[in-house]
Image 1 (tube, rainbow over the protein chains, first blue to last red):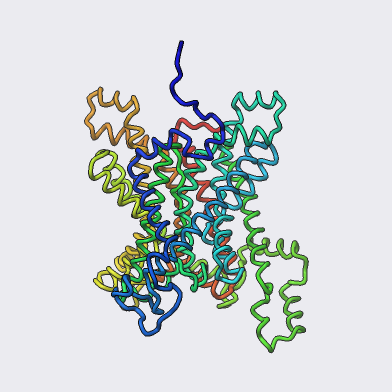
Image 2: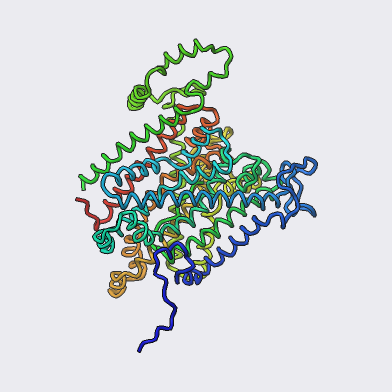
Length: 304
Length: 317
């Protein structure tokens, strides 16, 4: 008589949407860098969310008597060219930067995964048309397309518009990868048996094929957040991103250009903030990649 | 093999045509239309606008206009800049070689630094140097390129004065190769930084994979020196997938050049494109989009074909 002393293993395909249910998460956190990355990122995100607790200054009110002052008692990192507190702008700006990064990633991941999965599963002429569309999207250098579209709609965007643009122009690569995965999964016996059993194609796609194809999606999502943050900063620097009034790390960098020599803190603070955040995100992405998809090339392209 | 090449080229042509359609569409949905630059001028009456529209052929249906534009494009007439009045072809001819020089220099720096770095960390896997350099390469990839560029510019050009801060040539020096190189160092390092980081990691991963193969054990068992084993057998096989990666990354230098040229005032296509955006100079914007797309498509095609050519295991029939 064999006793099964372990808990029943959750074999629902939707476990892939809830990563904490998979043993891989245990493997992931043995990867020390990913652990460090998660820690640092959590600290930064919490710091941004709890910004009112960490600073009493207002990030948006200018104080023209106190422009470009060095770090002092009231202003831990000094003030910028309009007298706004740099530390406060860093914290509140983190909110916007992380929001843009995560928001654009969610849009890009959702659209890319659905597009790639449907295209891969359809096959035939529909697949070819959809992939032709993705090829077209990917033929333009991303930054050129973003700049042109931003210019057409007025040069400066709101946070929502920025998230939409970055998301809607960044899903092409993921669509291709998901399609490749779906194509290879389509050949499995379980798909043909499900078809013979009379399951509808949408059901087969979403319940059997897609959950197993999601591995590169997580990796791409992780790297995508960092890429989007860098892209938003680059667009701000070029003069085509968020309105200058909105505090974001990219805007801070762009405004600090003229004052590097006289007030280096102004540019070093947001620059290192972005760098450390993206490094942390990349550590997490690297850990995910090692755990899920070691041979993939995801995440090595970036704008700016 | 020849058939595959032809097939891929024939696939790229409709893509290029679609690119032209999208470009033309984007430029025509601008607020105010192609004649927007005249709309704010009080001296331009609607009657004059109508005459101008007829002269420029703007009263024809959009598909006629598109095909006429495409036909002119293929014959080499890319229009005239709204801002300077110069033919767009002339502007491109002045600016594109500069961007290509910058991209080439960045590629040389990326490959020249990335390859030895990748080999070094692969040879000393899991050592302190490996971890330190991997950490640094993460940092280098994550740093916004303009942040790094501005810091480099401030440190080396403003504070230390070793290198020129901007431009491709200086007014007070002769146009020699040495002066060009002096101006080229900072921008190409900035442009190539991210690639050094990512390529060295890929080379490291590729070498580590190949080292485990059986034929390396055979080579060692045959008594070859470690150096021979590494260079003659391991390296050549590890570099094969790297060629594809590098080839696919190369067109992205063009996008990165936009930022680098802005920081260092390099007179290239990227800065031309940015200026045209600010000046609402639509013919130049269209040209910029087209050139960017052409470079990307041709670059990807070349990388694909090169891989098929270089790897003897790949057969395309």
